Amino acid sequence: MTDKDKHSKPKLGVKSKAAIRRELEQATKKFLQVGGEVDNVPRGATAWEPGTRPPPSRPLFTEPPSERTPVPEVVATIEARRESLKTSRKPASKSGRKRSRKQLIYDDFGEPLRHIWVDE
Image (cartoon, rainbow, N blue to C red):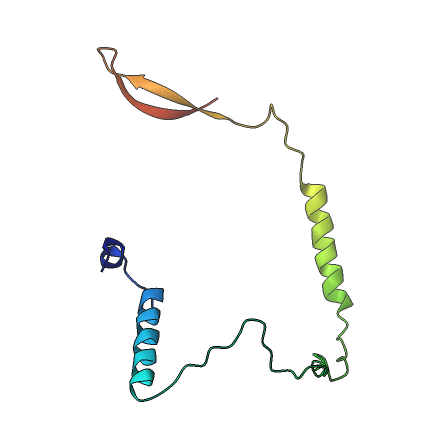
């Protein structure tokens, strides 16, 4: 067990990769002990016979499109609210904005004590 394993706390109900790896290794050992065999499949092998094509994928949308419910009054309300917000907003000017700055406070002997924020 590494230091990382000792200090990391897994989330409840979630297995770590190391735990899953250990479970797979144990299951493989158990399978081989009871007489199971592992077949090595060469890279690039496929289940399709040479010269045949795979079947086309199933279409995603098989049913006709459903009818939409028109809601023009709701759209009109939203658009009116959007327009009223556009007209009520004033562009922020740089001079009208309040700015804060950090100020250092000193004690009676000239030593810095703390920083405070002061509005300009």
